[in-house]
View (cartoon, rainbow, N blue to C red):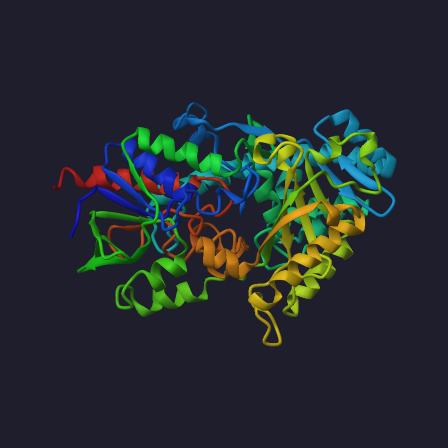
Length: 534
């Protein structure tokens, strides 16, 4: 074996870095091993084309836990989140534009529907109440359903007590969010087609489901739990791209004493007896540590990095049943200027381009996009969530130029009729540009460079199995004590001293950091409990 550490973390994504920072702060000699040349995993900034820097995969921030920002003092390490102001939905001859200014949004909604304007404020407050109710679950260790120790179930006892004290209306809403589709839930509140479609879009991100699929209302709530400076449902762009988040966390980890290495791909987890004792790199180097944390997904951890005999067949079968079904792609564009939407020309100002731009004109449009994916094809007219980061952070492109980030759904990992993503990649990029051009015809003349990322690219480049951005679908049966395997949702694994600390563990994906933080705290607690015996 080579050099010895107290803990080794596989993967330098934001969760792995969070875990390393907390372990190092607890006095553990910790090393992070990242296989790529740059830190961040999917939360990464790269200069894809000369002078143009992109948040290549993840592109906005909201879910990053406030306690992590506070405890690691991330602003001191360079974290700065620039707010995105509102959501603009371009339509044929019209638009829907909601901004952070409450009065302006109310006037805009009244232009469409007075009942919707009246319902909007009540809906927003109710969702904030639901987010506050569920938020504590993001910081707890899920109980093991097979054990009856009362201490394991105390968090749920507290949640049940809080549910009992909710008003009947809040109780009904919570049950609806746990069982309904995003579209059906929003139908109870609103009648305006682009409003319902744009709001429902959050319910399908990271899932191979349509907005009419039961269970997507919870995903809607999951994204509502994001907050910036205490404001729920606030979204922002990190200065310097999402890599700025990862670099700030890495800086905090280094300051606490952690070692962070890039270009260090782990080939296998070394197991002796029933416990992990370190890792072996592809270079042949071995690193010894009594604690191994994996921030990569469950498939890669258990089926690719471990000897097949390291876990029992039943556990392995459960891992194989865990669903990924990547459904998203990404198109990054380097532009010589700003797109101009025919429904709101730039001569009237470009404020509407400074927030999110959502191609989601109606519920039917969204469901047709899902129909394509159901039958093994990318959406010919996809849902696109577009942002232009250079309008709030000009440093991302040369003067006068811009970068545009397009998150695209649907792009199924498995294509029908023998087609491959290597063959369909550019056609997928063309479909995205064509969809944008329907509303902003000048876009084609502005494109200097184009980067297309399919689910297969996300798997190859970032190690995301089947291209799932959350290391596994955020469907209800794959959450809480079922994530990633029933009975093994407490960050521990059947291999002694091997822990999960990435989005495959509770509470799931997004630039959140919670899995890394909770896993590290559990490791520290277990280590302290073992000290008297040793």
